[in-house]
Figure 1 (tube, rainbow, N blue to C red):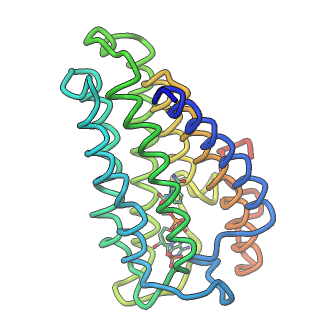
Figure 2 (cartoon, rainbow, N blue to C red):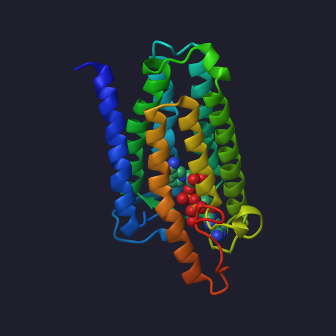
Length: 252
Ligand SMILES: NC(=O)c1ccc[n+]([C@@H]2O[C@H](COP(=O)([O-])OP(=O)(O)OC[C@H]3O[C@@H](n4cnc5c(N)ncnc54)[C@H](OP(=O)(O)O)[C@@H]3O)[C@@H](O)[C@H]2O)c1
């Protein structure tokens, strides 16, 4: 079988995973963070979990990317750098910013995320440095420029929202309070909103089914969690603002 056929199959498997994850997550909320509960087997410290489960998105990504025929061309390098900009932070910086004293994550959740990330890295890295065709002129194509702008806006929202949430706790605290101000007055989970915008921006910038597969997976994965988070806040805080949307400002 030609590798291009295998790659196309991998893209469709990822889209299939997105559908399956969305259906499953409508009924079962992944048991980490505020939704942590017993009955999910052995657990590991959550900081370690974040580093391990996201590590393929840095290490394996760099390796698969470097093996591509177009790895040292300008446009693939820019697209690869955008990816690594996000994932070096998510894997090596974000976990160490968390105020997560004593928090744990089930091994099965970290393991599933790890396996998904291996597939996703193959889908995206192999596309941008090998199967995709991006000449230098792609860098001033409107699809790249618009996609990169959307990516940057989404990334900024995601980063600011995560930073705000992390700062709700003083060092050593583990409890929860109601976040207020900025996009938090509009939606429960602006960090998820930003992340979804970011990866749809990447899908536009790469103009590829590979990029779209990951954007759709991200929405299918954390979209339902935003609604679970809002349900949790409403049940936990009687004064939780009733008009706050879950994920998309003014809409949903
Ligand atoms: N691409 C994907 O498919 C995907 C999947 C999952 C996550 N992500 C991204 O990974 C990042 C983290 O995700 P997450 O699900 O852990 O986000 P989260 O539940 O919003 O939590 C982010 C951090 O803030 C803390 N926190 C949240 N709400 C708080 C509150 N009301 N009071 C005090 N502390 C609060 C959390 O503590 P606790 O952990 O103790 O609750 C955690 O340390 C996000 O940027 C998300 O977009 C991406």
